[in-house]
Image 1 (cartoon, rainbow, N blue to C red):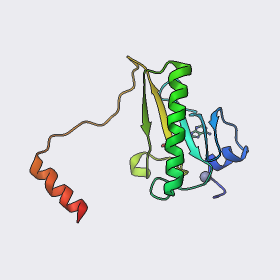
Image 2: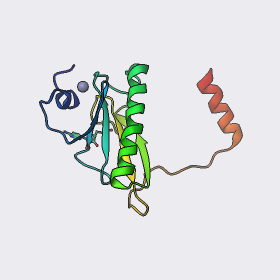
Image 3: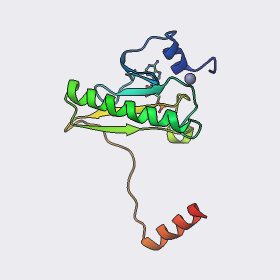
Image 4: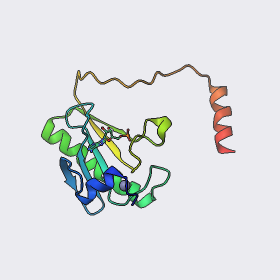
Length: 135
Ligand code: AMP
Ligand code: ZN
């Protein structure tokens, strides 16, 4: 574990957190700067930097725990929907470099809007791009 990893420190109990769930492989706690009420983070007990660094096993544990946390948020906070978000790399908004999944409860008429805007493309362009990625 890197000395400066805040999520490892939370896992070790060296930093406080508002825990809502834990199991053998993961913990979940409330985000300190929530996007909506109940915005949570699921964090594997093993340190890995991000999606590409993590083992398939840890990723599977994180998804399974995210499903349980989503159920809690639906049942206890009456969430109407859930967004899962993982940021991998600084360019993708990652700020804490210990793998985590955001579990963001959504409420009908909540003000949260994602910044992405769908763009126009055509099937030929998509086929060329798919070829480039597959090659
Ligand atoms: P990301 O930008 O995807 O790396 O997300 C990191 C998240 O961790 C942000 O939403 C922060 O608000 C949250 N965060 C940072 N420090 C803490 C902390 N000590 N306890 C709870 N959440 C934190
Ligand atoms: Zn860590």
